[in-house]
Length: 223
Image 1 (spheres, rainbow, N blue to C red):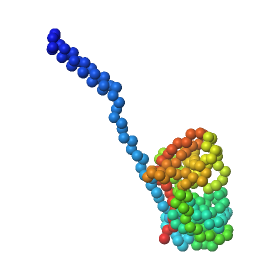
Image 2 (image 1 turned 90 degrees about the vertical axis):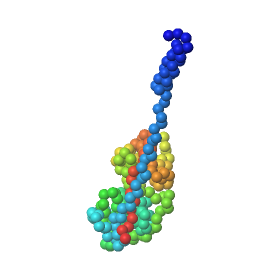
Image 3 (image 1 turned 30 degrees about the horizontal axis):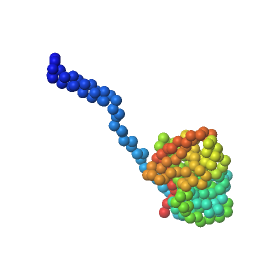
């Protein structure tokens, strides 16, 4: 093949080859990344306003325990008044109500398991208000990877290498703990977006991993 027809044929072959190469090296179109689902906020109401366990909750008596609820220390996970975080931290009485029985408190340690603990109480049960919005924090969270984390109630904590001002605010069934600067809002939970996040690490490690909070448990009073 010669002349103009041959030249046209050559140009067509060149264009076809260029198109083939472009198809190989062209970057794929960007794939949209789905946003994580919004954190589900759950309010559990295990105790009535008259100081009785609410229907559907199992009561466990701890006759050898002892709590002091006289310090006017609102539970960080409370959405209603007069729910106290009682001492000592060894009792893990992070949310307690004044029981109808004298010298007793009804306390919840894990709002996800529908168990109320009846514990002897010393001193008076002082009326409490609510913590400020920035201080409020759920008593228990479930992370996006399924880890269950319980709010820290004092006690000695580990050290996060490389972050000397950080403290553990929640202890998790895996992922170690939630870490945040001492005094951080919401115990270190970032509530800026619909899907809350925390930073987790094993004690002694350097790197922090951002994880999404799938579910957050608060407590209130059954009226």
